[in-house]
Image (cartoon, rainbow, N blue to C red; front, top):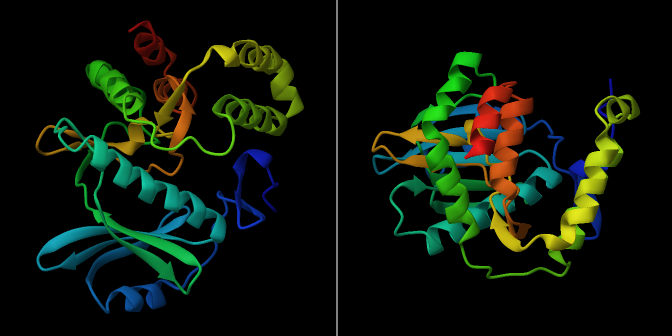
Length: 266
């Protein structure tokens, strides 16, 4: 069955609209041989949209992330920018960490790869986490909110060509258009869209990670939290996007409305 094309998963690059959700098939053996020229490949595997791996050089471990399509390469480039941005402007922070970039390039001149700092530890809560695992998020509410505030306070070094409010509203409308009609009616989604339209002019421009979720936060052995996967980073996002997105992920993906409400109350 063919996956339907959805506007909300499209990115624009080099006069083309690309889907960042759909990956292609790369030969894992060939990829391993490519990186073995410079690193020892300790482990390599196929992820949902990337080829992922752990590389070793001079007794130091690195993390490999290789896009498997042009569209995925576009958002992977965003992650590279995010890593540099956070580490440049929040480098004195030892409580929250983002992987440092150590290299990037193109495999077969098409597929972008990143070589970054390797974070080892347990996720705050896995994507398929149990009710009990998601309930443990309550212990981290203050730190999650604090992290979202630190991100918002990073400097706006770029504004982009499109007004941030126009961009946010356009993306919201794309998501609305992709929701099945029966779901729109059942959950009165049109009312939510109207709330966005009525309130968008009240929003301020703030940087965002863009995918702040429990499965993108790693509990590191030194007690700090590592934030990964900045593929939806924006310099010119809207305020409070990250914490609101986190609450929505807890509510809809982890299916724990009680914890979502507890975060919201804070």
